[in-house]
Picture 1: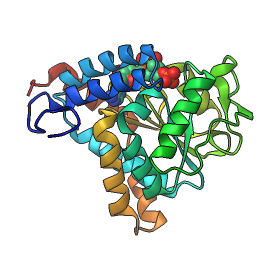
Picture 2: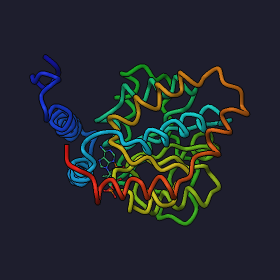
Picture 3: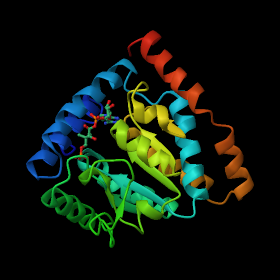
Length: 249
Ligand code: PTJ
């Protein structure tokens, strides 16, 4: 039996596990109440996608892994939903691509910042970024704009999962190469990303890590080829088509 007392081959296993983790996140002061609403919206899109990683999402996850391996200073941004759903998997990915983890919240409070940082420390991260907050994202209201100058502030490639559109756009305007994970292909964050990944974060992160481990010995030219072969427009169109025309599993 797993953490939710259900066999893993139960047809609704993933969805129930996700709900359980988000609920627990709220109880621990990690996830915001708005995070529950965001989860519900994500689930609806996932249902329409057949709760599976579609081919274009797998290609995006591979391109994202290559992009993270190519980066000089990659940062994985985490919020309350990400921390509740995939903390351990994020730490694995950070390890595979040698990235920093930075807490960056939409509804920023000192208590949630600390609770999320502590959660990642419990998962083995020695230096969780985001608490210094000595950098700013230009053109964003104060609290949401706070970043670490030597974290997201100095990053060349940033992974921003489940992000709101404004901040995704503002980060893009700072010249960062943005990888977005969002189940809604029409969301502004997915639309502004260099690499949009339309997949449930619960599947996306482990798959990115698997791709990163498989690609780790490739040379830069080969990694760049994989990034260049990826087209964000085509990937978003494929995801939208899967949602509109797909057959439910
Ligand atoms: O912890 P905070 O304060 O930073 O707040 C985080 C949330 C997620 C509440 C905040 O960023 C927010 O309100 O986000 P939005 O604008 O609701 O956008 C979240 C997007 O993530 C939506 O487009 C959802 O479809 C999508 N989403 C939700 N759950 C998942 C998801 N995408 C991938 N995997 C999921 N499990």
